[in-house]
Length: 340
Image 1: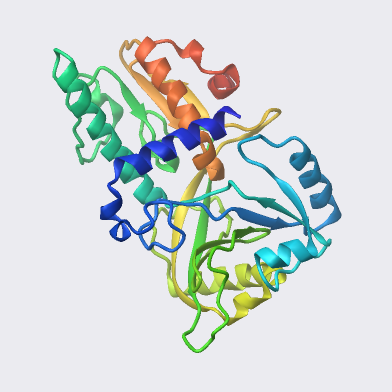
Image 2: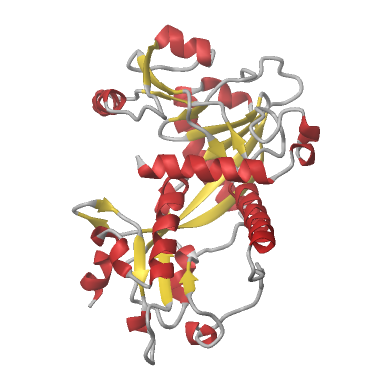
């Protein structure tokens, strides 16, 4: 519950930080359904039940859903009203009207703008002038930063393990994912519904517009390929994997043309008795020299980063400010004891 609520707060802060007239002329703002410059797209998400096992699990989730993120059970006819020609194998689908799609890059840029605004506001009302600076430079090891900052938070995703102090000390599993950009050809008139929801199944369809879709995602475990660029061969392999999964739920995807592809490397946390939990905590013990809660780790958010990030970001900030690791739930720092 905390994850969802904190994420919604940060999404609202990001939206408020960017002037509407900067995006799409202010006609629909950041939440507009068809703006090419969206940060948050509020279309909702529909998930057809693909198997009886899937059906039982989703029914249980629907009965215990949060008030702020409803899960509604809808029959085949209702699902097809949301998305015409949607395939509903078990004659039941689950619709999440409050679910959102987020553009991560624009979201992060908007959050940085919000931080700039906050610094300006507090500098006016506070006797001590505050500054926010973005430095882009290569850091070969953490000790390079030891005398420059009061605190350092390592939030590098899968690349955290590339730091010499953390090499072979983090229980991260890497997994490369490829997503494809598809568009509907001009000669096909029947487009995706103007305000239709995105689709979640074995493959997901993130709807950017009636003729613009992102299709994902593949899972290539143990990959060390950090590049966002996708070769022709990798793109073809991804399409061979994703299109059959997508067409099983949305047959109309066969009419869409491939435009481009991008990739990213997930930092997957280890599987524990509590599930796959992110890695947080103070890492001074991994550095030479005596430190006092100066260096911190924030990684392993896996494929649920957009759900976890706001709540966990708040926790790590509280820990850093108080120099107290105990404010972080013990399950999230348990990885340290397992690595000793």
